[in-house]
Image (cartoon, rainbow, N blue to C red; front, side, top):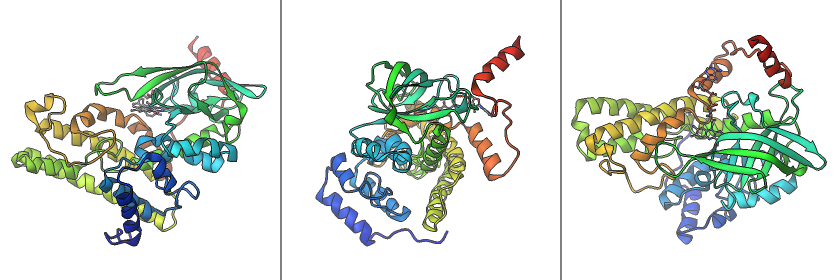
Length: 400
Ligand SMILES: Cc1cc2nc3c(=O)[nH]c(=O)nc-3n(C[C@H](O)[C@H](O)[C@H](O)COP(=O)(O)OP(=O)(O)OC[C@H]3O[C@@H](n4cnc5c(N)ncnc54)[C@H](O)[C@@H]3O)c2cc1C
């Protein structure tokens, strides 16, 4: 790594800090107008910020106590909005990006299905062209925020005669279209539901809502997932966000729990892991500052960050003893800080198990790291080159 972190007196930092001082409770529309919603995007949307300026902006959001738009509307700002920038039409950008950056339109990602989560090439939802519309039928599952979203980025099969990864396309779907039904799924955190099932019954999408070209779906999904995984290589307890090992250790010191040698030993290991993740973030930043494109390292980062987060909240809970069985007992103090969703150890503990499944399970990340970073032989998929419509017929024949 060959860079110094921007100082407290960095003029760029002072400028951003002054803006937050002049706008102490900014609306998300003001934040977007100032270019702070997606600072790395080009004008008129962002500031074409390099990774260093992005880092400054992220820090200044935290210091100002404002939850950044990428925590409120992550799918639009972090994952899928960029696809509109690169592959969308001018009309799509003008219609969909301003309300997304202002967090007026929340987006969701309609990818996983009962037939395909890890293997997204197995999805069965169809998009049949009929005049100037596509007709959508099928079902999605585990769709985060679908119940709040006004826009869904949908992957559906437009050509079943193509191999499983080739006949897919992406669409920008208005979630209020007739025929779309959203049903919440409640998880054991007991908090507001994170994810949902979504059903499509003869849903009509205008053809000009196709993102990119017909058949581009798989390529777009891969781009979007890499961005999402990179964003999760952070030392926070859930998805890289929320309290970190540093905060856990401060809490253990403040409550005297650190005096227990077993707790101290575990906390020390976690502290080291947390610092390693912090260095990985800096290394990614350094790479990008030195002109190297964001690569597949996000897979490695997420593979380490998710179990790390689970271990953090597990120790936080256990160290609280019987009080840890109560919801939000506040026994282990956290600094006054806005983390967005995962604001306390209790929530992080109950939701944490989902983090090693969502956005790629551990096994899938390991496969990707093995195949693409270590160049080991590929996980074999005998169905990969077959026309999709033949796959089930072959399976049925083999079973009979
Ligand atoms: C909190 C959360 C939020 C989510 N949000 C969204 C969302 O917004 N949009 C969306 O589309 N989806 C979302 N998902 C779904 C998520 O992407 C899938 O759950 C995930 O990809 C796993 O797919 P699956 O559930 O079908 O499990 P499966 O793919 O059936 O996997 C079951 C098990 O088999 C293992 N496995 C599968 N294939 C292999 C292989 N080739 N080699 C070795 N092991 C394998 C897996 O690792 C796993 O342990 C979310 C999930 C969670 C938990």
